[in-house]
Image (cartoon, rainbow over all chains, first blue to last red; front, side, top):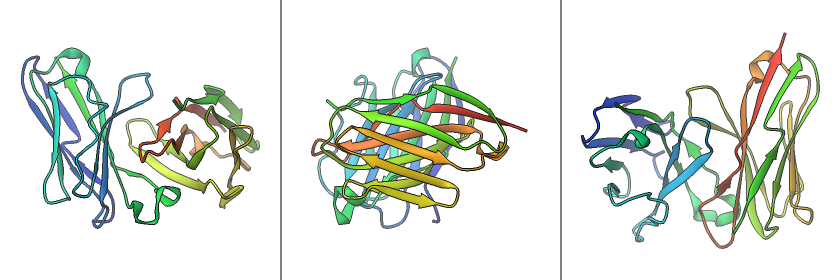
Length: 117
Length: 112
């Protein structure tokens, strides 16, 4: 597609339920990032995928959070047993770092607003 | 560990003013610096990417400069318009990582 897409745009769930958030990166982009943006806070890095390499999961806040990327394209972020503090906007970005770190420009999706009641 | 600071946190100006937004970083060994804008309830839109070897980049009324030695970047907005109202974030890639460090942003309001 023309840009990064995310679905759903909004998700309301009850505490304790599991949720899945989806990201479709720009076609051909090998790198994919997940971030979280809580109200009034900055962007918090969650996880990074690059090609077939093992993902960098250093930003995941707890073992309730996991993500996968199938076929080097679409990614799903899963939050198990959601808590109220998980309420935030979850943003996905993709890039094509084939030219090296100097040219690694990120493009963001519109985000998924998650509300945990 | 890279730290990125944006000053001011908020700015309100009348239409037509020329603006300077600041971004400072602690580790000067950067690969690139990217400026974004974020409208309320939306994702981030890339404005400009400056590579470490560059001093500035321009796009329309926007000009971003980079001074690695002093750990600073500025985003200059000429002849501001109400449509420029948004939060502006800078992100720095450094330290051998593809994962950038983001500032907290400057919230800009341009009133008619």
